[in-house]
Length: 139
Length: 139
DNA sequence: TCAATAGTTTAGAACAATTATAATGTAGAA
DNA sequence: TTCTACATTATAATTGTTCTAAACTATTGA
Ligand SMILES: [Mn+2]
Ligand SMILES: [Mn+2]
Ligand SMILES: [Zn+2]
Ligand SMILES: [Zn+2]
Image 1 (tube, rainbow over the protein chains, first blue to last red):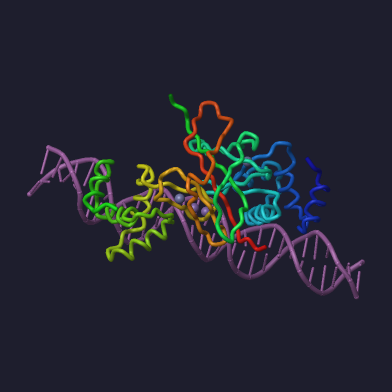
Image 2: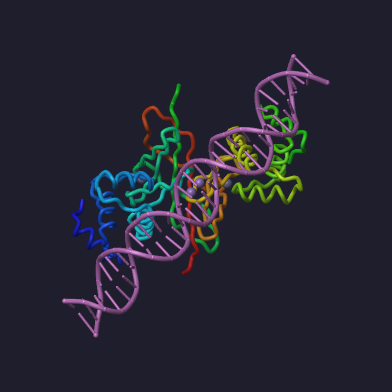
């Protein structure tokens, strides 16, 4: 819910040049109250719906990766032939409906904190992600 | 820890023809006390170490997929350019060391049961998987 | 003001995992 | 033994992603 000059500030302050491509992608990703999940292909389609000036596929990949590195996006681990990203960077988990290939947020308050009672020497925990696979309840 | 005739019985009883390729792959996957994780490429290498008669890549893919469908293998959801499979089909979770690209079992007794206090209408839960990403503890 | 420069975008090629194809082979039944 | 459905195979096709190198541009500071 920011305007373009605020995206420019945000990009600049994180050390990314505010090019028109990046600002446009910010608009598509962040100019809404609702967060959402997307694949690169879906993002490309969204961009072309909103703008008539197309952004090359390589730039979309580059931008998504740099936004992920800056922490503005998360990547969701699932068994899929393509990568899923999430504009919701807060701690939360997911339902995955394999038949519809549909990802749904599980609010963090709806999951009891996951307790891991073991560790790996010399390693520290970076993230804990729960994936709940669901299927049609044909009963 | 079965011998070949037992793999033949197992395959036959699950409706899969016990071809020599499938029996060989059973040997490589299941003829050990320890379970393990693997990618298709790693499996192909294991096979060629154990046998001098090579199995085509397409057959390895076909067999792994049919074993997964029969429940003899699980696929682990991870952000990776290749699929990871698990000969441990019991309920358990994983550490993933992204720097080493290394998957490690977390024994089910080392994770408090994950409680999900929400559901999706018309869908039932098929699996709940926890992925704990770790990194070097440079401190 | 404007050239220098470092970073960015781009089209297209390259790459790698996976899946499809279609011809050949074979396990199991009759 | 013969038949048939299923399985294997080499190879091609597909597809998501990354690489490349040339053109472009935001920013700096002379
Ligand atoms: Mn893939
Ligand atoms: Mn991929
Ligand atoms: Zn989410
Ligand atoms: Zn495992």
